[in-house]
Amino acid sequence: MGRHVSNPLALAVLAYLMERPMHPYELGKLLKQRNAQESIKYRHASLYMVVGQLSRDGYIEAQETVREGQRPERTVYRLTPTGTAELRDRMRELVAVPVKEYPRFEAALALIAVLPPDEVTALLDQRQGALEERAVELQGRLAQKDIDPLWLIEHEYRLGQTEAELRFLKRFRHQVTGGGPEFGAFWRTLHTNRSE
Image 1 (spheres, rainbow, N blue to C red):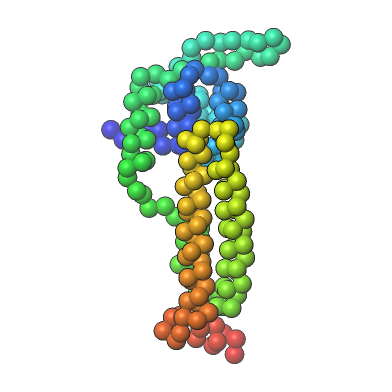
Image 2 (cartoon, rainbow, N blue to C red):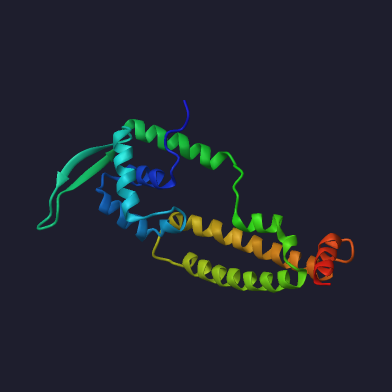
């Protein structure tokens, strides 16, 4: 039997409901409090659609409907045993099994020869500046003392990726500017011929 839950937002809903039963509004607040929208694509309307789908599929179920003051009624959902099993199975797979992803920058590198080398170095400098700013921002988040470091682990991962990309950019820029005749000969010829 294949995986039923592949949407990261659905996995987040299941994971948060593992903590305690909640209504969708609470789930949305928790997503924002934990800055999960930086790792998981989240829109308010899509959260309600995901909750509905998970309920229809039997991964979560309504526990009760509550009303506080003048607010509208809200349905509180809880995780079912089927939902717990699916969440854990899917998470085991996500953690253990690397998959090929298709980042935009990797696609750009595969097609980099369409831009002249001099332009590429300027663009790499621009990207490096943006990544350095991101690294400083992530370091600031990781320095927070009022939050369990577990809730910052994706920021630590993102910082590691950012630092690795910065190292790559510096090496690649050096290859473009001083890699010698054996690096990018076709590339340079392509743009020399097009400018004549």
